[in-house]
Image 1 (cartoon, rainbow, N blue to C red):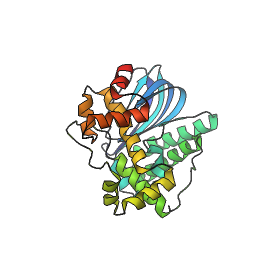
Image 2: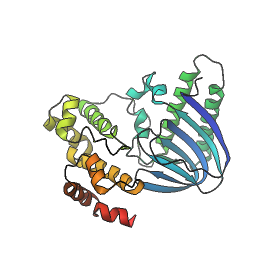
Image 3: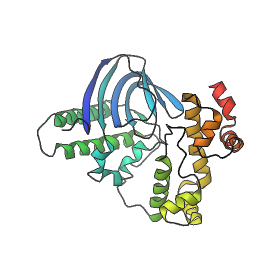
Image 4: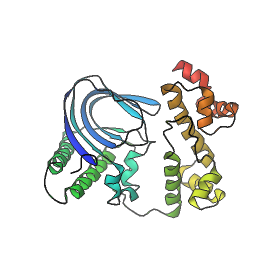
Length: 279
């Protein structure tokens, strides 16, 4: 099996690990046992125990260990799922949604045993000779995702492989198009789409129609969703870069820094300058 496409390994006696914060080239699913702090987007979460972690290629994250770690990890490219049509299953990939917290606590012995068994099978098949082993591994990844959805305290449906109605499909496409623009890693690159009209043009629908469908599905207007996502990215850039506030405002599509300040303060209650200073 091509190691550039997929790889899996055991985590054993790991006591120091701090990957650089930033965009990753691979999707990652880990089962870890130990104490760690996960930094993702503008948040940090300390975990202690057995957890499943899901890292995607669009959300900056890093993992800081605070005790000896053990468990399993598998990494795979976007193409590894795309060739089998897995990326068309928005339900399947919902676990990698950047709005979700990417860690899921495994609290029961039965759940732990089930997930360990799946990882062991992934390791076995990745080192095997079966011609269809990639398909088997993709199926095991699907099972891992469903195990996480079962653990999700928010009550996500772990088996909703049903067709979506038009409003759900279009809203999902809008959110994907929005999120694909992030993270921002080059201050000379400006967001290509930042208004309802620009998104509607890409989706071949009228802006009013798009806004109506998105609000029906999410309870929020397109403008509110865009501003919240931009502010989330702004927090990341304020915390993890030395870019000036003017540079951050420009790359996020604001012609005037004062307008960026107003949007940021309306969402967070703080000005960008005060947010950076206090954090």
